[in-house]
Amino acid sequence: MHIHTVLSPCAELEMGAKEIVKKCLAEGINIIAISDHNATANSLAVIEAAKGKPLTVLPALEVQSREDIHTVCVFPYFEEALLFQEWAWKRLAPIKNDPNLFGFQMIIDEENNILDEVETLLIQGIDASVDDIIEEVKRRGGMSILAHVDRSAYSYLAVLGIIPPNLKIDAVELSARLSSKEALTWKEQALSYTIIRSSDAHRLSDIKREHATPIVLKSPSFDEIALALHSQGERMVIWPWS
Image 1 (tube, rainbow, N blue to C red):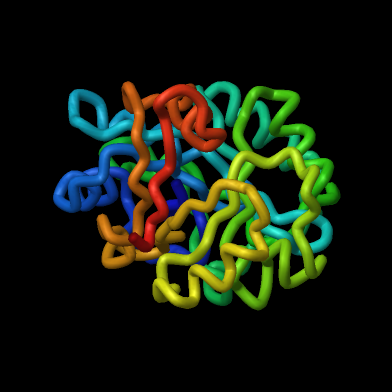
Image 2 (cartoon, one colour; image 1 turned 90 degrees about the horizontal axis):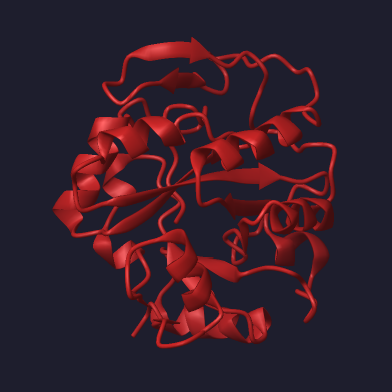
């Protein structure tokens, strides 16, 4: 649920649409979310590249708040994610990206043809709080996942210290790098929120089946994942470090 493409300046140039789809299929991964920094434009390229293949691709953004907290914001359709991107970009400071310093920010199609290059630096906080972001995602029918809360920077716990029990989020993400023992220590701080494991892939080698989360669904879709994250019906998220 957390994969970057060449639109994220910190991602490797190998993170093209066709390459991501090929690696996911080789790893037996069924569902992914393309979650570039403050942007969703390349979600469409990966969605198109996965057509006719056993891989469901959801559009998403990893949004950085005013407090420098990262939240993965997932939507059922690209058009809805794109409207949310417009909301986020209105709150981006006009800081120009330096490709030599941060990396390129390229919008591509499913064949990896370069369609455009984003000039505004995407790896910066938008002028909105994490609460504002979560509320806006909920208002638009999306899912909010607190990203890599075990990290010492850009995470809810690192910035604010505790996760409140009434936050309107759908899940808490832990990094794939954690051992089983380490994951259990972080589980206590996530309270009763559902925990998922994601790769936060910036290179193809990050995309591995063991970096994903087993989820029991009736079909591979946004709605089914939303139900599973809240343990509704027979849908459920299996503890990833089992």
